[in-house]
Length: 163
Image (cartoon, helix red, strand yellow):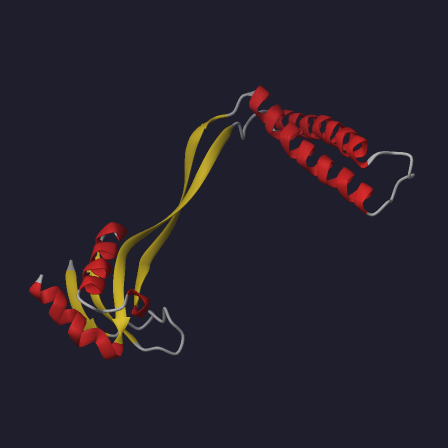
């Protein structure tokens, strides 16, 4: 942890309230522990901020998708869209009154599932399976500044120095 007592140029975490960076951590958990220590010493957590800097976006592979998984995902998406469409058609009486809303939802969901699966499979085949993996995006920061309202910054620096 690095203890600071200056105002960083790009750290306006709370609009209209001057804050000063009092500590810099390489990991978010450490920054949270600092805020917790400040709160235990009587500095309100609502007057502190943790600001990540040096942000990087990473798209990590989480596994390969099989043809069956692609088809199932398309079917689920289509089922949900179909069910919602059927519900809206029934809700606003956009079909003949002799058709039950539940029957309409069921049929629209089934049709949506078939169309969703077909469209997903065609898209998968069109790319030749080149996009046959799933990813999980993450946002990371190289370090985290702990900011405190300027009126409490001197007190916060003393609290951290005593730790």
